[in-house]
Length: 332
Length: 270
Image 1 (cartoon, rainbow over the protein chains, first blue to last red):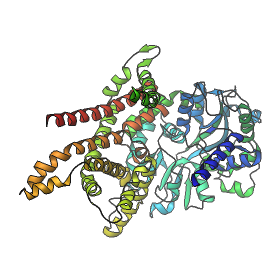
Image 2 (tube, each protein chain N blue to C red):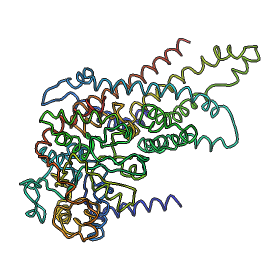
Image 3 (spheres, helix red, strand yellow):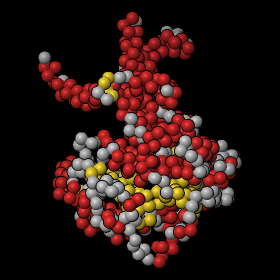
Image 4 (cartoon, rainbow over the protein chains, first blue to last red):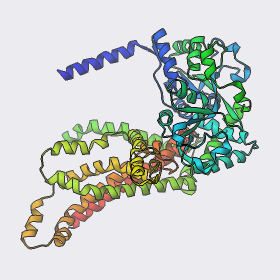
């Protein structure tokens, strides 16, 4: 009897899955940039489901490449450089979503192979309670102090896009040249204080104090502070920070093209942009956030020394930089 | 003939789920721009980075397999030969860790042995030293996490082999006047060394392929499964990825095949 009930439930849910409309977005991590909230709102509004997907930028690109002959995904979300790289590899089809003309040229591909949905800055996300009385670090120089031994985490750049943006950008912050030695020399020194190079999202580990200092997108830290009410401080390092545009693109051969276009349009609309802003990622569209939410963002002055990295250069050097990081920083 | 016919589904399945992917993988590892080349294999064995990952994988798996085989001896013996109240429940609980995926075991290691893990905190309360803090991310954490799911697996493997062993033999030897060392050396060891060796081999090959644990907690101890993942997500280097995967498969196959041959050969001679 139980078995019968179970099997009829299975059949029912399978039938439901067929009737239900789906758009597949690679890199749709619910805790990142409020994708959980964005996709839930879209499902309520339209009945179209966008299932969560835990692949980071690089893993998403690798999956698209592997499935090139038989695409499974409709669209993907990336940190800018990786999205640019995916477009270079011919994994995207051109599409210009509604509102396209409002984006400035540096934030989109002229043919519509990728465009920015929001942006973030690299910051220290500090769990103050976990510091155990040590001062909150204010600069990259501070992070090298022995005080913070075994306390610092950043994402493995070979797997996660935010980690790649940070590793790549460190050189610009250290005012290094095209050989990137200045950046790598800093990362090698920082290595002694690193607890782990995260290969999967560690959002919850930071909240519960397992990780005291996470070098990641500022928005994730502000969300921990204001939405999850953690004892969190978000610090923009005094030497400067890196602007990280986060982009989307429509997959070449997307299985549900019509639904995908509607969804991509919606993502640049007021409602989606506001939801992303509630997770403290800066909307690419000028929308009214309301005074309460605006106040929770860090002041513009904090970002005075933000570096804009050319995505084209980042994308072409990406593989070499990741490989160098593996050999010179991770393996030591 | 009927036997052949009945094995057809199995043969199809092996062909489809094992031979086809292996062939594709092998092809991917040697095909480069329309030509055949083994440069990925050469790089794998020449480049220090990949060689270290291969060596680490083998050493870690061997150490874990050795400790698991040693530690599982007593529980396997108990489950195979003794009857006690609640045995089935104990056995079920004991083998539970086997069913967890590697990533879950990785998270568990962080909760138990992380920077603010349960064990380091208790240790600090008791001794005042934070020596164990963050040990999940060190080599010791990796070994413990692997042991966590490998000991139950080794126990089950050894237990089924020990069931064939007749405890009466040891008793008979004792009534004939053999002391404990004599009984271990002349009766028990000759009977159980083969299952021990094959338990070691099975555990070693399972560890070789394990990925999830290392993904979560391996800070910089590079392991081949992790590098396979990196090669494809990080650098889009399909040929290197395929070469590493094929090497891992071959290594596991050679270990299992030669151990089997060796123990069988020894049986025939005896």
